[in-house]
Image 1 (cartoon, helix red, strand yellow):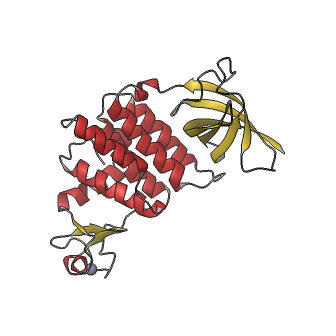
Image 2 (cartoon, rainbow, N blue to C red):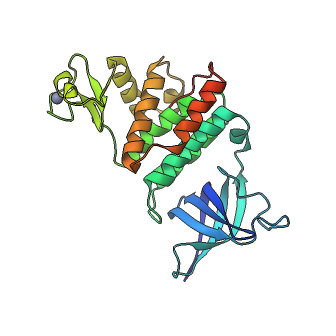
Image 3 (cartoon, protein in one colour):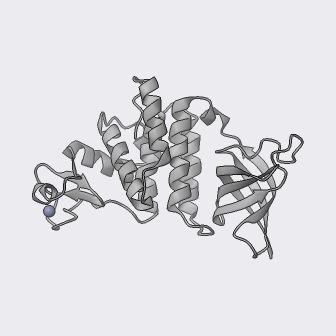
Length: 256
Ligand SMILES: [Zn+2]
């Protein structure tokens, strides 16, 4: 039995019983944590709206060691990120980001760099940068941080060194034309897009957010979503939501 305390972001929740809620947090000091917030759905709850998706707060929890779920004792809001919930595109991209964090990590697996990337991405989503760009910058770095960086220096099938003409993108990275012919699932990639991927990965965060990369942004977004879907074994839930948003607002340039 242990008491824990950490800064954490709410990355998911669902109702439990009459008045409780199971909340998933991504915390700085303990990684992903799921816990029960007792009576949090009551009007006069001590959590009083603090457990909204994306909220950053200071969490105090009690781990009984008897259940996968900890008991959430307190969650004091440090930053609500309420601007992120105010329009559909921000909401959609932020949802994709927290879905990646929730589904690519294991419980109680501490990952300070990923936590910092999550908070930094939510902050950027409150600013002037187009939300799709924030999600792409997050995705490129999240894959790297979690050890799933796509290989872009050589064909992932035969090992032929890149650059070569007419590259394609497949599971795990770049594929040469001959190897791509063997697999119907490959998407042709423009060399500009592969170069943009490298920039987004290696430039300073502030630079990566504003660097002009044209339609490579959408192509990288689609590739990232395919990579994440492959890693979790099914399509991301948010990608469908984002496609629906794009149909409603065709000019918004939403990706992935
Ligand atoms: Zn090859």
